[in-house]
Length: 114
Image 1 (tube, rainbow, N blue to C red):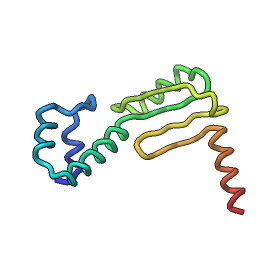
Image 2 (image 1 turned 120 degrees about the vertical axis):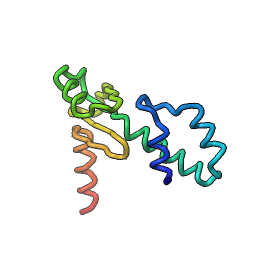
Image 3 (image 1 turned 180 degrees about the vertical axis):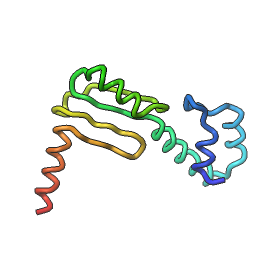
Image 4 (image 1 turned 90 degrees about the horizontal axis):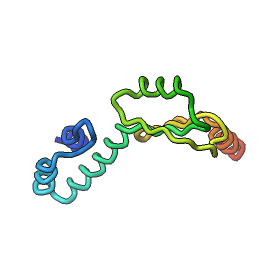
């Protein structure tokens, strides 16, 4: 069983690992495989969580839509006025930046390329 499969199968819905499973993994895996497992476990936990940054309080319809879109995942919504408007969503290794700050950062990157 590869590290990713082991990490997914050892996690409960709430993101916890049963103590008996953890003890078994710690006893059974050699150090190199344990490192791979822990890295896969961190990736899986990040994948199960969605961090949303909004400017302002965020309207309830938007919060409900985010809940529907990312159902089954832990949804963490925070306020970040530094975005300058818009929204930034991070889930796993993916980042969707639809903020004014992100747009300006993209524009500066393109200008540097020329």
